[in-house]
Length: 315
Image (cartoon, rainbow, N blue to C red; front, side, top):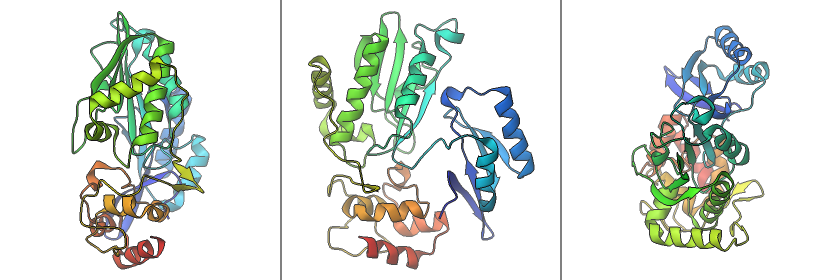
């Protein structure tokens, strides 16, 4: 079991070290909170690392110290689990920047409040940029907002990582209120129709034209927002069954060392809680798309035979 809110960072000579990443909406932090970070890192021999998601990670920690560290920090973890809204990256906007066209801090913090840690078919990242300079890298986020003189432009489907994809413009010239509504329709359409796949992969599968038409039709007609799919049921993730396989695993097959992680969780979704409990954050990670379970076990320091036995029992 992973310590609460921790990620396994590395295994060296059989010894594991962990990292935690407290939630800092928009990257804003008070001097008093920074002092807590410094005190904890000093006390528990940790190292501080600024992340690309505008947070401060504390790494090089021991498992037995993690819970005490959370108590001393008095901050919640940034990420609940792999497949959720993981970050809302915000530029300074009109609050702090002379070039900004829109108040990205206001909109970004509102999106963070509404969606951070919300369960999704795969991991999701949001970028909010107050001008076309796009300092929050909005076009490589699943949902990206860019401010202009005319209003907010909304981009969808961006990602970096092992399979980079530039986002496509969905709609433009929106007011603050309108852009929040459009984001809600995007979120719910994605939840209702996607498999375990990033938003960009989902858009590629059904076509951008179809995605744009259906989302904007719902927005224009102010259709009732419904997810259409239960993502959480009895504390278990419930993806759409079958499809989108990467290897040869099919329903009824035993899981083996060479079974691909993406196939296991799509074909046998009952294995997902077990994978989560063991600390495998492969559920939607681009690196796991073609990764066999033996490789995931090695990376995470898990005994392979026991893992395969557990997954076959759960499937």
